[in-house]
Image (cartoon, rainbow, N blue to C red; front, side, top):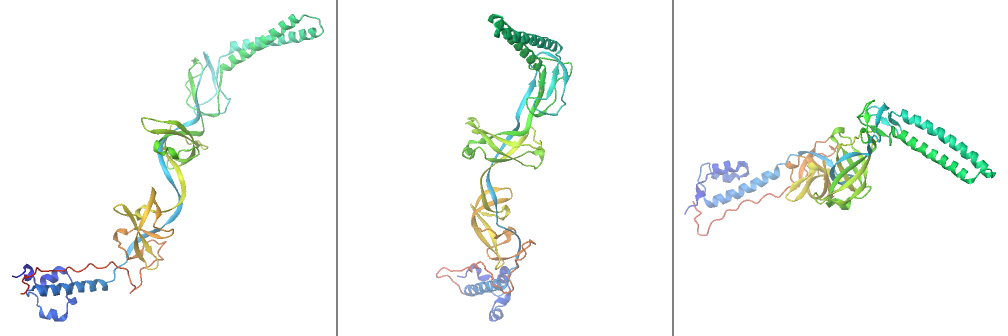
Length: 412
């Protein structure tokens, strides 16, 4: 019985395998003309010779170097990140209000002005209080004079002790009335409780104000409070003094640095987060209360080896990189253990040494032992291997073996 592939011709084999006829022996080429029928034994012999020729052809052909870009393994300052969002608040902030009912007679600040502690902001009509103050001051001076005169007479036993006690009582009473009047006058003069910046005023001269009427907001923005929430899973890392970085879209890419100053005493049962407060210095006064800030808490600061993200070649759950061997100008694939990530960089825990060159562009065209040529001007000291140099290659795959069942016909 003839096998099905007995009708394959020499032309068919050569065209399918796309191998040059020069690798066949001269005698076989002369005896087998194109178009001749091929038997089973002849087919096996030809297939073996073609396989040997393919290996010889591949070994004789030198692979071209693959152009790549490389970067060295760097050792930099590294840290773990905890990200959050928070809102800025002034260190101190109050709403300035009136404490008495009266008419505003003068305003001594402008919208958005910076004021010092104790600076007069608003004055109210106080003509009646000033007149009463003058009267009480006269009474105090008279009662004091009488008290001093009576005290001198009492020492010489020229007056009774009861008279001296009466003069002392009148003098102390007048002084108390003077203090009360000064307090009434102070209520009609509103001063800044601390240094800061005022907001937009809500009154005008001549307005009648009452207790609780909002006059203006004032905030101490020399230092800003930043309140934010952190998942309770990070509670162990939250300690006073933990450094933070913060930035906001409204101020571009500028970063602000501060430290954690306080941690709440309970976890929110609904969100499972804990409130944290940090302080940010604000010497240039760019930060404004109410800004939404993106926060990064910095923990576990250390020196670590890092490589660019694009150098990683993931395979299943493992991570590989191609390392350029400077001695042979070839790329070797190496398994590595990665740690934390940050934009553009990955921490390497094991598998690489500082200074080694890893391929960042062109890794998809590489295979272990492939020659490379580096395109980076900075690292072009690495050149392709010299002509005739040995190059590590992957072993060629074995030629297919064709078998026939016992008793099968294999003759043409």
